[in-house]
Amino acid sequence: MAKEKLSTLISTAVPLLIENIDTDQIIPARFLKATTREGFGENLFRDWRFDAANQPVRDFVLNNPRYSGKILVTGKNFGCGSSREHAAWAIYDFGFRVVISSFFADIFKNNALNNGLLPLVVSENFLKKCLERVTAEPATPITVDLPNQVVSITGGPSEHFEINPYKKASLINGQDDIDYLLSLRDEIREFDNARQRVAPLP
Image (cartoon, rainbow, N blue to C red; front, side):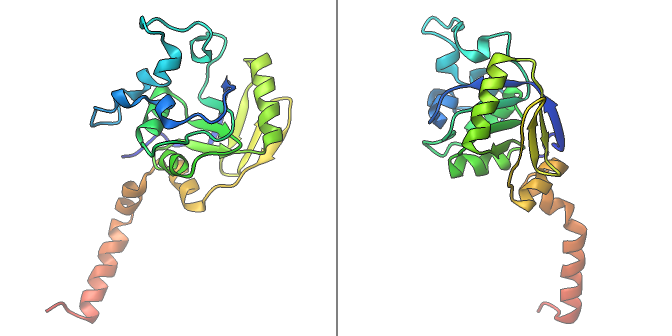
C-alpha cells in the first residue's frame, strides 16, 4: 500500500518525555478489531489522552494546543512490548511521519519502516537537546533531510543518522515492499521470458 513520500521534512514537533513506551500504550489491545489500517489514529495513546469518563486529559502533551507537527520526539526504548503492527498504523494515521528517539524496539522499527513512518535514531545527547528545545519553544522547526540522512534543530545542533538503504529508498518513493516488487514487474517479466527462452519449461 503506497504511502506519502518522505524526503525532506521541516516541521514542528510534539515532545513526549516518557521512556519505555510499549505498543499497548501506543494503541491499547481493545482497539485492534479493525481489519484496515485507517482510523487507528483516533485511539493513539488512548489511555493517556482520555480519562475513564472519555474526557481529554489536559496535562497530556497531545491534548496541549501549544504542540503540533508531523514529528514525535520521545524517550528511549520506544515501541517495546508486543509486536503489533497497529502501533505504527496508529502513529501514521494520527499524522506523524517521523518519530525521534535514541532507541527503538526492533520489531516496532521494522513495522514503522514498512508503513511509511521513519523511526529516527539519534544519540542520547541530541535527543536530550531536542526534547529540551521543543518543550521550551514549541514553534521550533526540526528538519529531517532523509536523502542526506541529517536531522537538525533550527538554531541548534544537527546530527547524522543511519538507515537501511532499501528502506530509505522506499520512504523517499512512498513504497512498501509490495509496491517495490510491483515497480519491478517489467524487469521480472523480462527475466522470466529470457529464462524460458534459454530453458523452456516442460
